[in-house]
Image (cartoon, rainbow, N blue to C red; front, side, top):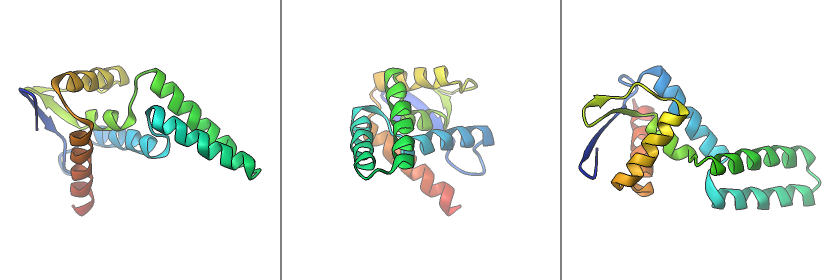
Length: 137
């Protein structure tokens, strides 16, 4: 895929994706699905938490409070789990193989992609396409 003038090669298939990248990408995708990222997700957790408190569902309220805490912490740290899931699938950038998949390296990649013009919509569509390829394989 191209982002601005840059060529980004992704791990897209189950047969070509190293297991470490697959596990890492899936980890961030799962966190995104459960916890989310940013202010909209924080607001959603607060609404759910209020509902659980109103219904006196202590266990669900406690779980929701934990998810809210993770969401707030991630937002403070500038982490978007969906973006991190995408970065974990990057094989090479402009022909240079990526070897560092630490959280800090993934955050730097996400920031760089944003500076190059990657939109959240394209990122989301690309992840959905990869997910379909992995499931239908």
